[in-house]
Image (cartoon, rainbow, N blue to C red; front, side, top):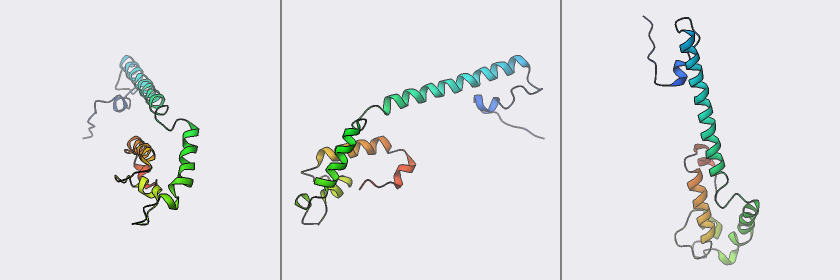
Length: 129
C-alpha cells in the first residue's frame, strides 16, 4: 500500500499537476497557484533586498574606505593601545570591549554589522577582529 501525505504547500501538490488522476481544471489551478507563489516569493525577496541592502552605514563606498583607513592608522596605533594588557584599539573594538574611550563609533558600526549578519551561518567563520 503506497501512500503519501500531502503538506499544505503549493510545492507538494504541484507533483500531482497534469497527472492522469487530476483533471485539467485542477491542474491548471495548481499551476497558477505555483506561479503566483513564485512571483510572491520573488517580490518579497526584491523588497527585502532593496530595503536592507540600501540602508545603514555601509552603503557608501567611502564609509568602507574610511573604516579600512581607521583600522590601519588609529586602530593599530601604539599610542591608542591598552598598554596594561598590550591589546590594540582595533582588537578591543572587534571584541566589543565595553570599556572603550576611543573607537566608540567603530564599535557601534561593528554592532550594526553583527546585527545585520547575525543569523547568517556562513558569517560565523569570518573574523572581524
